[in-house]
Image 1: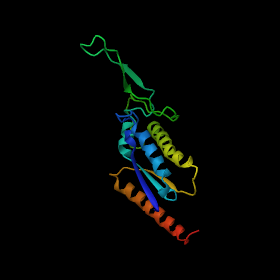
Image 2 (image 1 turned 90 degrees about the vertical axis):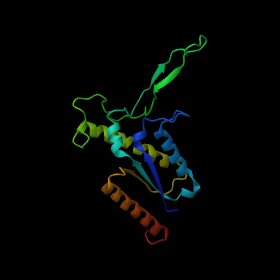
Image 3 (image 1 turned 180 degrees about the horizontal axis):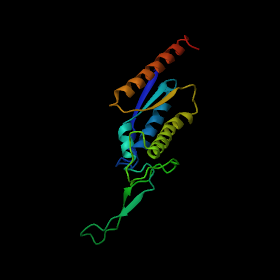
Image 4 (image 1 turned 90 degrees about the horizontal axis):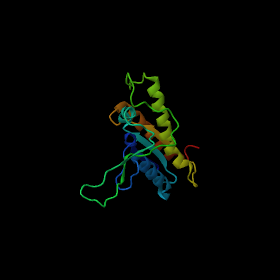
Length: 186
């Protein structure tokens, strides 16, 4: 296998799976690590598409990327005098090790998402760097890391020009890897 394409939706950083209360970002990174550990893919190039970038940019202005968590204590269940109050997470902790600029949730005037707002772009770029590093670190930490090529792209599947450039890049990776494997390129 020359190349593995791995796709993850980055706009889901604040969404959680009910069954184990893990964030979708954490689950995606874990799945990527498991993919990297598969013996079948040990020598394969990896291309990661961090998709839904357009929705991610918008969400950064309304849902904090880093969250310390808030717990809500609910009342006793109605009609049950012996019931114990229980804690229910209202907002989960996430990305506590993120050290980049954080977007303000309430800002006037609001952020401009067209690339002209320096404050927002700094927040966006720092967050992208953090996510990129989360995925890159999974490859770097493997004991059998050889000369695996890892390419990480932020994508918006509805942006055809962006997707075209990235797919051309993926084709180049596959072609170069194949030629190298055949001994045509040193």
